[in-house]
Image 1: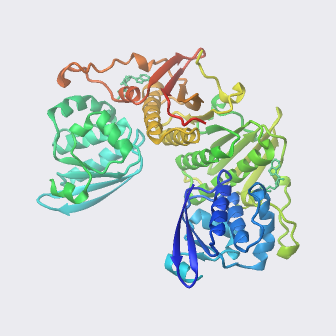
Image 2 (image 1 turned 45 degrees about the vertical axis):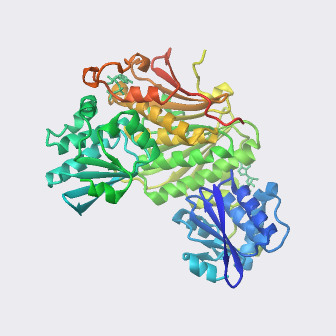
Image 3 (image 1 turned 90 degrees about the horizontal axis):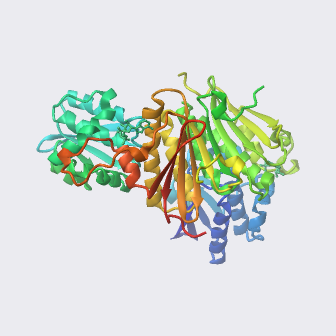
Length: 136
Length: 136
Length: 153
Length: 153
Ligand SMILES: Nc1ncnc2c1ncn2[C@@H]1O[C@H](COP(=O)(O)OP(=O)(O)O)[C@@H](O)[C@H]1O
Ligand SMILES: Nc1ncnc2c1ncn2[C@@H]1O[C@H](COP(=O)(O)OP(=O)(O)O)[C@@H](O)[C@H]1O
């Protein structure tokens, strides 16, 4: 998995994380670590481009959730506790979508795991990059 | 492996075979069969686009060679004898490049097997589609 | 008796088998293997994706919760059974039956449901059946079943 | 004694193993497996491509010239050995030592060279060493060696 970033100046500044490759238990913590760096650098709105992610395991869902928690300014989850982090997901999903972290263009298997897990109620999912950026 | 075809009317009509996927012992005969159909339909100049072929085994080289033999109007190799066909390759390579079948944009591992086998002396290899088409 | 023994002795010439170290870096190999083997066996794309995800979740659990950093192996087999497709996962970690992980009680409002992981839940949703055997010599065998996914051959 | 025995008994916890039916449709699985396993072991892309091609050529030969349509298995293992990477291929087809296939005599003009196949030739060019053992119980073991291909770990 590789992550590159872009920045977009709209109504608010948006950081785009372009993720490439499978997200699984071997690398989901790298994704969280990358977002933590961006948050430390001032990022407060993140669009995660999933168009080049063929596979996302439940560990990837943990990562997405952790990033949203981070951006809410809460204690960023300890990477070693990352695996426990999604025990919080159920409660968060129930609170409804947050708007600091949004997702762009997931491939069909990733859409399926987002839906099956209910994470599509916690993240806005966009199909169009410009529309996604304008929505922040 | 999938093959789609395009036609291009230049100085002479050129048929483009867009090959997608690995070419190996499980499917090289399908590639020959496709070219035989095209030849039966009148194709006399073929550009094989290899830009979407991540892997080509020596059976793929057999297929490329058989297609060139076919286009020379010689007895098209029996698909079941395909495996024996490249016992003729050494002699053909020595005669130098033929110009009825050309190759477009092989990826690095395919370039390597073309070079290692000497097949790059039997086929013109082009990096640019327009230039390749204009060369017929 | 649906316990599956190692392929090269059984005379079952349609089964493909993989053995990798119990290390999360090898999960990608497990996924690619199941994907390609299921494709050879004529399964449809969506069914393949589901089996790959279910197996990835349970193999991840075996590595992280089962072996917990101990050295060990994960074995994976893909085998056809009529129109069905089976993915068999074996490990030598302490016995753990994923069928005993409680189902989330969907009748409760979300905030009152017991909080649990997603891995086992996803693997159930994405397959038609999960079979489990504690292996006589120690370790676990989980069989993921997806029905009617193969084109008639 | 460099004959390699089956991984899950040996205590060699860095080796990955694959067993597939002796059918050309499974060659793609062999290639993907070697590719991913070599990547996990830190090999460079070009070396991985070479090992994948060499192994594909010899596995193809085992299926087409060795088993000749008989049912059977191909076993593949990828293992590190210091900075080197080994790919081990095993089959139960009649004994065949690829090292005995004559080298093309490059001093002869092309038209006077004995006409031979490309598979064994490519597998030699693309590896640093090919080892061979007739297995005691029947069948063949070929070990493809690529040297100095792994980043120090
Ligand atoms: N192979 C296993 N060995 C031991 N315990 C396991 C195993 N698989 C799952 N578990 C236990 O079941 C729980 C639920 O698993 P799962 O649904 O995958 O969620 P998670 O792994 O996120 O906790 C785990 O937290 C763990 O306690
Ligand atoms: N595993 C094998 N079993 C029996 N014969 C083999 C095997 N591998 C190769 N051969 C023989 O060696 C010859 C050379 O093999 P190769 O270089 O791969 O070329 P090709 O397969 O195109 O003939 C083959 O034609 C075949 O006669």
